[in-house]
Image (tube, rainbow, N blue to C red; front, top):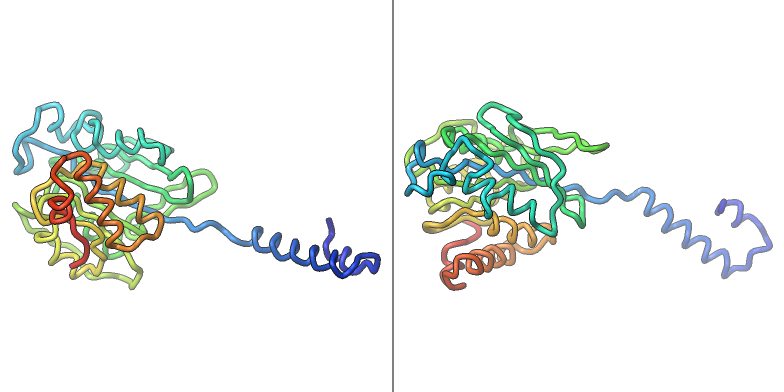
Amino acid sequence: MDFKRALSNSQFSMKQIIVIGLLMFFNLGFSQSKPEVKTIHVFVALCDNTNQGIVPVPAKLGNGQDPKNNLYWGAMYGIKSYFKRSNDWMLLSVTKNPKTHVLERVLFQHKLNNTYLLADAYDGKYIKNTTIDFLEATTGRHEVTVVHGNKSLKFGGSSNLLAYIGHDGLMEFDVKGQFNPINTNKRDAIILACVSKNYFKPYLEKTKANPLVWSTGLMSPEAYTLKWALDGWILNETELEVRERAAKAYNHYQKCGIKGAKRLLVTGF
């Protein structure tokens, strides 16, 4: 219907004109509004018995050069496998060796909104590089552009949320890099690694990223904790509510008691 022509036609009653005006308003609003796109970038240091200072896991799970069977990637509760089985996420693409030290990259989209998750599986031998890449991304550096359909998605330092999954290599080494933020954009961070608050805090204080969820003790950095936390983050819940979801997930799978899970997984500095 040509609404402007309809309004100028004197045969319409005032009531009809009001209805037509409302239709014009809503039609204009829907045609101009665009759903918000949110992006998440997950940096996964593959579990590696040989090259990381960890308590060894079964050899098949602890081969840092084998994403398919790795504890933090292709195993049941690995990032790729767990999100692929989720009813909330859809796997869009798998890319082999997209960059140096990264053995596989996966792209997911949330099924109910325009939230996209990019996850990189780093060769476990290069956990130090994984840590530096993650920290520098929390400053806004290293933007990664991924084209999917007609969308150009921004990850890396342009992500809304960045996550690190794996062994806390900072227990064994220090890292140097560009840790001063390049802009004032808000970037949330989730760090699932043993005692991550203690070891990553000095770096996040420099990068100015917001520590949404991190740990105060030893933990298993499997994908369920991240997934449940993201469920709340996508809904724009408070930091405490997101942390509550993470703790519930950890207790659900680890049977450690909700009080213990809340002491383990915390938010903020």
